Length: 442
Ligand SMILES: [Zn+2]
Image (cartoon, rainbow, N blue to C red; front, side, top):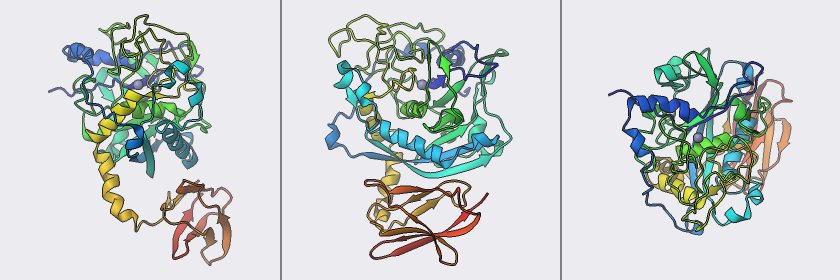
C-alpha cells in the first residue's frame, strides 16, 4: 500500500523576505491535499464525518491537570537556527499559559464567547533539549509526497524521536519554502500529525510511522523573545509571532482540527458546510487571513449550539488569525484534548504516572550540561531550598541564585558572564545538599 502522507495540519504563510514578499498566501492544506485527493479519492467523503467522540466533559474542577513531557530537538545549520535555551523555555511558557487559560490576553475575547472559553489543563514539562548540527535542509516536497522526514532521522541529518508514545517531540529547524511543480508557492511554519482513529478526522491522518509523530516548527516562530522573528504578512493581516504557532500545532497533535473545517482543499470548497466536529466553534467559510477582523461573519446561518448566528471565532488558536488576537480554546476543544489524552495519547500521561513513585526521591536536574548559554535548573516541588549557589570547583561562591518563584520549580541560570570551565551548582535544603558539576563552553 502506498504510504499515505496527509499533512492536513500545516500552518502556512509566506515568510517576509526580499525575494518572497510577493508570494500569494496559500493554505498549506489546499496545496498538500492535492496528494491525498489524487491518491485517495475516498477521503473526500470522510471530511464531513460528523463528530462522534465521547467527550470527557467533567467540570474543570474535577479533572487532574495533565502533564506532558516534552523533548525539543533543535536541528540547525546556520548559527541563528540554534535557538538559545531562553527562547525555547519561553515557548514552553507560552504553551503552559495557553493550555491552562493563564495567557495574559484572555480579556480580549469578545463577551459573546467568554462563556465557551475552555481550559485544557495541560502542563508541558521540558525534559531535554537535543541539539544537532546538520548540513541537511528540510522541506516539504509535494512532488514526492515527502514531508520533512529527514528532520526526524539522525541518519539523514535530523534528530531521532524520543519514544513518541511517551514524549511529545518538538523539532525546530529552518523549513524551506514549499515548492510545487517547480514554483515556490509559500512557506509552512509548522505541522503536526493528529492521533489515529478520531472520528472527526479523515482516516489515516496520523503520522505515517511512529517515529515521525510529533510537531515540527520553523525556528523563526518560536517564543515571544526570538530575535529571528520576522513580521510575516499574509492575506490582509500579519501573523505577529507570539509563540502560538506551537499552540496551534500542538492542538493538532492533541486532536483538534481547524475551526473552518478545512474547506479549501482541492476538491472541497471553502464554504460553510465543512465542520471541525466541534459544535461550539461557529461555522466559518474559510481560514482567517492572518488578521484580527472581529466583524467577520463568513457564514450567516444559525449555529445550533448558540441558537443564533455567530461571527467567526477569530480568537481561536485553531484559526489562521494573527497570533496577537488568538487567546482561546473552546470548551469542546478542551474536552477533546482531554479525550485524546485519556485515549490514543494516554502513553504521554503514563510516563508521568509511572514516574510518580520516584518523585518522592527526585533530585534536581540541570540541563543542558555542558552548556553554551542558559541552563535550566529544575528543583523537585517538595524541596524548599534554603540556598542555591553557583560555586567554583575549588568551592568559592561565584553567584547566589534566587529560589524559584512561588509555584514554580525551575529557574534559569544565565552563564553569559561566566568564564568557560567547570563550576558546581549546589542546592541546600534543611535536610540535604545536592551538588552537580556544570561545564560552561564558549
Ligand atoms: Zn493547522
